[in-house]
Length: 296
Image (cartoon, rainbow, N blue to C red):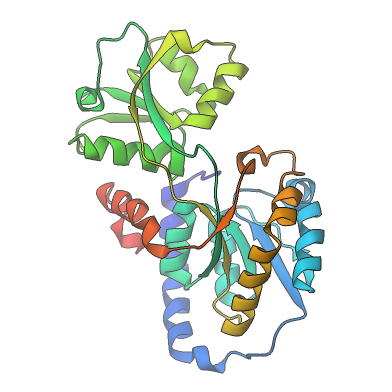
C-alpha cells in the first residue's frame, strides 16, 4: 500500500475527522435508511482514476452483477481521502489494507464487511550473507532499511518482530525508509539489515538481478492480518449483511475478477473470510509502540 507522508497525513486526518465522528455518533439515527441505488467503490492503495480503472474495471462489473447494484469506481489519492469520503457518505465501499483499516475504523466507524486473504503475507528481516548478525535482537544500535512509513509488511510488521525481540523502536535502532532501493542498499553495505514483506523481497530479487545466496533471513514474522472490504457506517445494517452474504456466495467469480487487474497478483489463491476486528490488534500495538497511539 502506498503511504507517502504518512505521519503528516495521519495527524491531518485526526484533526479533520474528530469533529465529524463525534457528530456522526450523536446523530446517526438521522441518516436515511433507504438503500442507495449506486454504491461508490474505492481501493485505498490505488492512486488515481486511470490505475483504478485498469486494475478494477472487471471487478466493478462483476460485483455490480453480484450485488444487483450500480457500482461506480471512486478514485482516491490515499486512505485518508477514502476515509473522509466514507464518513461523509460520498463513498459506500472500499478495499483497504490492515494498517489503514485500524485507523479508518477508529476515526470513521467504517464497518468491516469481509476480509480477503493474501497467501504468504508476512514479513522477514534479512542481512548480508557474510554478516555477523544472527538474530533480530542483535540489531540494537544498527540501521535497518524498511519500505515506507505505515506499510503493513514493510514497516509495522517488522516493528512487531523487533518488539518481540526486546527492542524499543523509538531508541534501539535507526530506520531508513528506502522503498525499492532497500535491497541494493543492503547488498552495498549501506545498511545493516532490511525488513520487508516476503513477496516484495522476491520481486526485488528479480528486479535487481540478485540471488538469495547474497542474503540471510534472521527473523520471520507471523502471518499478517488480511485486507478488508469495508462499508460506510451510513449504510443500513441490513444492506451490509446482504452485501456480505452475496460476496461470500460468489467469492470465486469475484476473486477471479480481481486477478484480472495487472497489479493484483497478491490475491492469487485468495479467499473471502470473516473479518474479525481483534485480528488487527497487532497493528494497533505497533502504532502505539512507535508513538502514534493518538491515532486511536
